[in-house]
Image 1: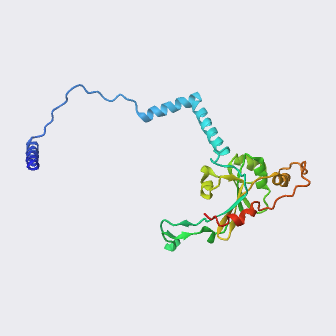
Image 2: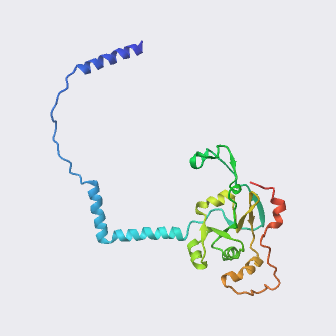
Image 3: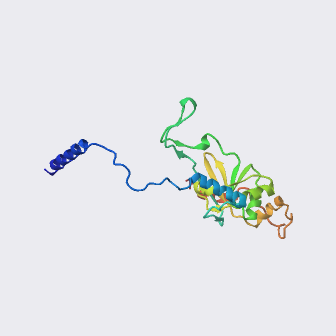
Length: 248
């Protein structure tokens, strides 16, 4: 009943409003043209004033300096500490495809739900070393690697190290790689083991430092070095049998 009454009232109001003639009621009250300055013109004037005073150049220099500082000294990856135990584990880099992947001319590379191992298509050549670039011992260790390597910093100044040693140092921006591989200690070495990645966390003992001392033109015969036997290149391998089944 109420709905019907509301419908009737609405129809009557519409009919009355439609029947009323529209007419010009004229101007009521004083009217003035806009006096506010044009926004773009105001910004342009302010920029010109900043340029004349030299303030604009100062602001540009400060912005450039901040950008250089971020590049020269990126924020270190959180949660990383020097290794205290030699440890080796295996990591499965396979990913599950969320949607179909098509190649040229519509060829299907992978369908949604497929489990794809990138190592089956492109093997990892050499090794990837993750180090704390603020620790000289770790830098020496990385530079002493015999196999082709890519050195990735989790802390430190990559451009400064590149200028000093004449080679490229990468940086794990935002810690994406550390999270992906579950890294919490440095130095760590990643190599390929069949279709898995082998991750070695290595403790740098005195022998490691002495073995690599010649890389940075340091003293060849450090005190006490005569009776020290350098460790094998694959430090941490003694734990392989224990941890090999720990595949992520």
